[in-house]
Image (tube, rainbow, N blue to C red; front, side, top):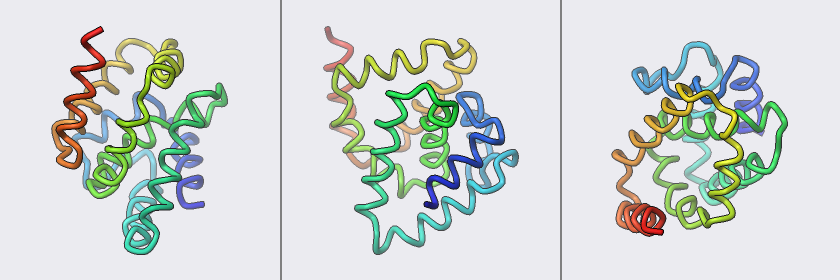
Length: 154
């Protein structure tokens, strides 16, 4: 429920591909245009001590479900999840190894289709956020590098 509420608020406040990048400069406080995101991060941090596995499972479910949908709220899911990762290193560390494992060719194709209509400047901003997160990820770093090399090779 916390994630669903946060996503709805993020989406209602114009959260999309462009929303995750401006907040990178203000990572601790989050994007001021999205009032509930700091609360979502705080609540998830508090719940993580007892419910880490279900939080991780829900984050991954949200990611995969959003790729197959054209609903407006689902278009904001990936930027929302990126914003959460920017604001919470613990969430990033918890979900990144499994997320990398799940990025098989069909999922990568869905990601490509999902973002094909996004304007170039917004897409560049999202790529900047992803690179920032990759640079700050220690959990599964070797696996992530191997994935990037294997994906880029063909």
